[in-house]
Image (cartoon, rainbow, N blue to C red; front, side, top):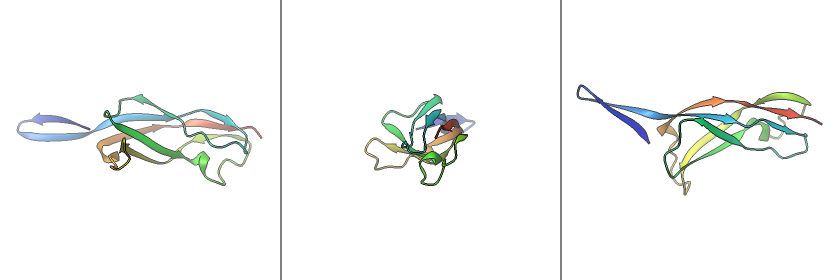
Length: 103
């Protein structure tokens, strides 16, 4: 899952760069959170998957009507069977979407 380059006898290991953007969501305070995202730059190694939670999922968050960033609370990148955490194989850059709370 790393990019490898050999420079003058030195092995350089660079984590794979991906950019993850959380979804733009409109919902009421009573609606369940939507944990949607897209990878807008880069890609995962075949067999890897993203598991994340945004702040809109936390119990007391987003109780006020209005607009706020749909920020990532935590993220893991795992193998398909979710047995191996491979998050360190990636340089993750976040682009937050927005949550609009309507009522």
